[in-house]
Length: 141
Image (cartoon, rainbow, N blue to C red; front, side, top):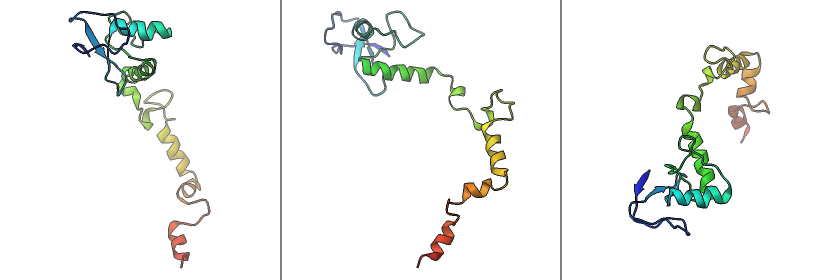
């Protein structure tokens, strides 16, 4: 993430000088611009009255930055997605009940009960007009 860079900072009014001042690549997906942590603080956070999006690094120097206000929104969303425990990102249908894994009222069981109820399977499988695809093909000359 952080690397010493010889290229110019992406901030137009950059006042940071020196060859050993690291720049950070923008954390927003698809953006490759690099900024100094100080420039990010001045150009994005202070200018737009925002707080830093990464809760694990709230004080400068920042290890994750956004180069613009638009990138800030993307980076904030990206950081939120990555900070969620992978186990909780996609909960399987048989474990999404209120009481967790042991709850019998999960999506899978609700769907099975509904489809087993008399008439529901036919409602699920048949088109609204009551004709099957096979029957409609036979009628066409």
